[in-house]
Length: 473
Image (cartoon, rainbow, N blue to C red; front, side, top):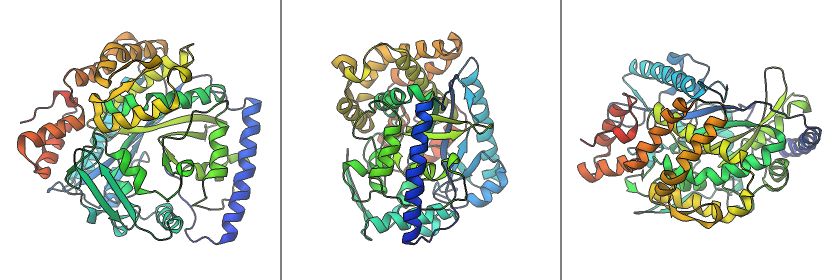
């Protein structure tokens, strides 16, 4: 969940003091890592998933305050725009029954959201980008009334010297769009999977998550349309990267795949945060250095597609986890858990591998794979370990789905549970039907009536039937 701040007006002294505290807390984290303090003997996971509220015309409805009050659940919280919200899970140990339990909890929460939205004649929706959204919907008067959002907008445009955001995405069609604030970020709703790791393995875990980003972003693609333009299968990726761009070089982009793998320690990411990324929320908190409050806040304003996080358990002990941010929201709760299963299974399998993975899949190949899969989905041509080249669909069918099953078994899931969730992805690949594919196929059959398409999408989503079994009628 996002961290709220105490104010949004900052003078230069606040920036100076924040940077001093950030330096101190980064050094402290380094000491903890050397001491082995961030040890995690068990694997835990969880997620955040972002949703939309839409009205009877399938247009975004800026009513999340009333909606959230009706839901009355601390795990369902505001997001950037008043037509967005976020569902959070409680963390679970990755073991037998965990995926089933996570699905049951998500579905129960989703049903509560549906019931609450119905009171206002609204509907909730899980999708990467809402096809009916318009540029005019992304205005500051639609921003959720939290200080951190207003401050991020102000500081991003301070770094941009007031220049408008330029979105330039060339896909099946070409979109060029200028925008005067950061609200376009609200279009990029996602499933963010968290996996807790031992500090000693965190550097490799971070690298593995980058390697897997092409697989998960393409297999879960669900964002082919923006402003009635057909662009990438996962248009969220270029849109988010451009929506909060600060005109920085490759080394200091706020939304980024990164510039290399980590070498020795996850501390490298936090050292990069301190040295390469300007502070944009210098909120000075009355917290002891041991809470790493300023380090964590600053890290939350750097939206790496795979982001290392430092958290604290109920006993106050710190831990490290990696947030895998590349997966689109939706199409259904069942699809979301299947996407989580695919990621966790592959993650566990590669983490247990004795192969020199970084040598077999160099960083520049992993990066190129990621953008190819975001653009072309299951049809993307990828290079995998040791230089093998094939489409993502072929790679999943011939190797990766079985490998994910092995990883889930190694983590303690039963064969039946692992296959139950991976079967959702198998069906999707066999029918070449991701959420993006379904949207594209529906428009090809019925024409560019995006409201009718969203209406058909919501109807099918409400049944919680995986997207590959959706009809196009």
